[in-house]
Length: 244
Image (cartoon, rainbow, N blue to C red; front, side, top):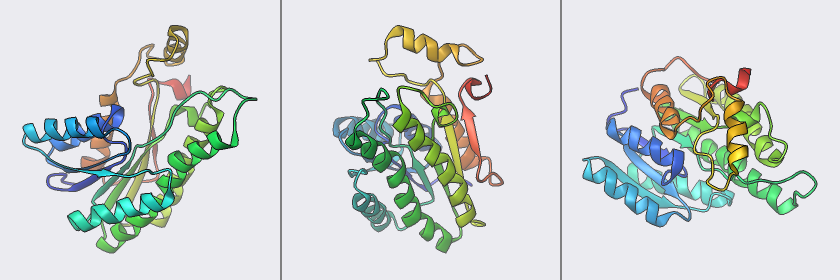
């Protein structure tokens, strides 16, 4: 797909990995539709940075824990732009939930944002991509979906659901829409992580180092620009953690 002037919706696009994806694709000429929830200031900073470089970006706010707002986001972007060529499902929650202390509210948080919103956004947008006979959906998973973290069980299971959803969507939206998933390894680990926990995550990789947000962003760009014959794939960008 020639990404120049294509409409790209990125959820959670104002910060961290989402921001890197927005900058990478904007630099290639994409028109970025950046979703955010609570990161209004960061979204405005991203908008300024992209526009200062000659790029194009629009901002859209929504609470994707609410399925209705996920569908309303899709509709709002469509009304403003007339089409969506690429959907990057990046928005997610990640925090520690030690086994034995997980609450139902925490479980629902993970599944509402990390999985349910991905499904309903993809359903709403995917059906229109089918009608326009073109489109790409890229889901951001996690290496923890393959090797779950004992203190992050609800998170890990929600990301395993994203992997299963990727395969299902690839089948449901064929032959016109390609759907793929990227599973990051230790990338932009939270500042709150103890050093020992960070080092453990790094030690689980074959490359023995932390990845960067731009490792993920460049993989997104590859899937958009350079691969029209890949669908239903889950690509590990994890320094070899999945095969260790």
